[in-house]
Amino acid sequence: MTLLHIVLATLAGGLLSVLLAAWVTQMVLSRLVKHLVSLSAGVLLGASLLHVLPEAFESQASSHELFLCLLGGLLFFFLLEKLELYRHSHHHEGDGHHHHHHFDAEQAGRGGLSVLVGDSIHNFCDGVLIAAAFLTDPQLGWLTAGAVLLHEIPQEVGDYLVLLNAGLSRRRALAYNALSGLAAMLGGVLGYLLLHPFETALPYLMVVASSSFIYVAVADLIPQMQRRLPWTETLAQLAWIGAGLGLMALASIGHSH
Image (cartoon, rainbow, N blue to C red; front, side, top):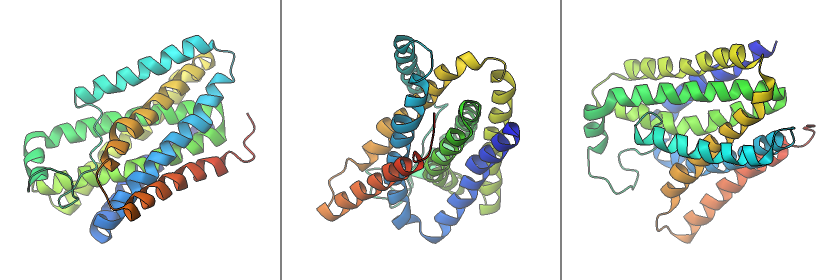
């Protein structure tokens, strides 16, 4: 049953995020994506600091070792992103970011393949982390999958647009993104098979999951919001971040460790 939940959760985090991203891109891109970025930042910080890290530190593992693991995880994801193997593409043409016109087309021409490879590795890592969360606590697994789904949507929007600007049709861009999304299910199944016999390692992997969420929120999402904006838009950012934190706080009600 746990494996079935992992498969369903990773499919939701991988394929559903791709489909929602395609819908957002076609229907309400310019207005919704910036709010999704703020919401995602709140969800990721809430999931990691209110759920995943407390769960790990309530285990019998050494707190000193867990903090070392957190530090190592942050550096690990930093290096992966340096190697363009852990990409977070949330920009789009006309989004107000300071890049020149047709920036996405040039990026796609130079690195469309790296977008797909990086996204697949990213999704695979998310699948492993979701599996670790389910092996620790089923409710924590669904919370982790929900956090992954929400932060994947703006990323998939960016990847989808890069592929469209590379000259791919909407159907082909969607198909390629969907294939990369399936890497989450592969990571989830392999994570379940490899981690199930080694439950003592789960607290450490949960800390790695937290480092992934914290890194994405602090190194990628929050810097996108650090632009000079009218105070009304700044308040909207804070409201969406608060909404993400509130969702994670509400999810903790009734969650017994």
